[in-house]
Length: 121
Image (cartoon, rainbow, N blue to C red; front, side, top):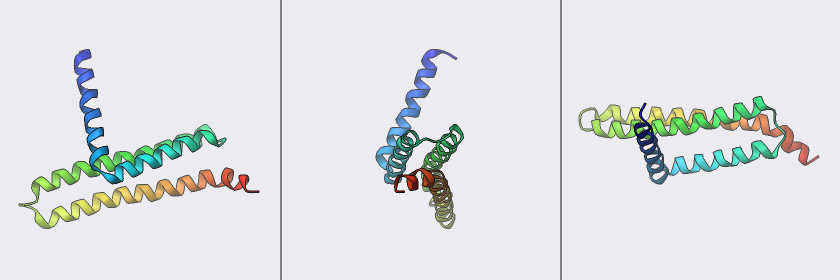
């Protein structure tokens, strides 16, 4: 691949990431939560496996939120023709983000609970 094409593709990806960060409050909230998890991963003495699981769970939520934004925009394009399905598509995609976020919180609690509770003993 030509280096200019590679740079362009990264530029487009970065532009999309910045756009979603600016336009989607949920993505900003999830990014802040991801940053907090990243910091806590290195504050506490966690295993590499625990850090990897936390990283995967966190990235999953962010990627699903990006995909949710894509589906919302695509569904809005189709709105005049598929009116009652548009709402379903948006709700189902939002539900997938919610399920991933709840799962990530549970994973975070399971992993962070022992070191955090040890601080208060």
